[in-house]
Image 1 (cartoon, rainbow, N blue to C red):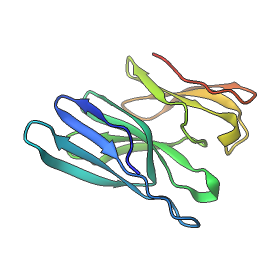
Image 2: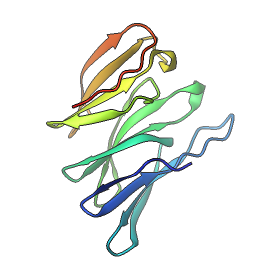
Image 3: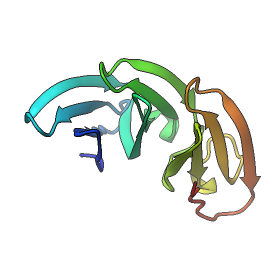
Image 4: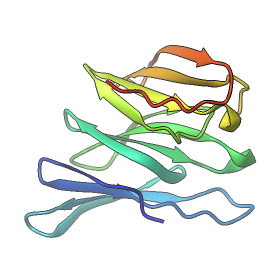
Length: 149
């Protein structure tokens, strides 16, 4: 499956998600120059690419799901020029509800029924440059949380 895409500075970014039952999910992130119609790079990522993408200051961000034990997701940052993975952080959930960015912080929403650590629905905040977890807020129950920055 193909993810949704974003365009940042005339570069189109999107990802793939291949899930075979009983095996870890796989995926790639792609970058295409929309003016020259040429692929700039593709990078294999540790799981299938989930929604959505974000780009800022030469870095592209997305979430990937490895599919082990049903759920094992990471937020990853890739160098926008090379596709090299800069950092990855475990999320312990599927990112169904999206994420947003503001002032160098990435806010990730999650849904309780998809949490692997029993933490409930909530929002996590990450430093966009380093991937460091800044804080977590848990809302017990089964609601969707979509962070808006």
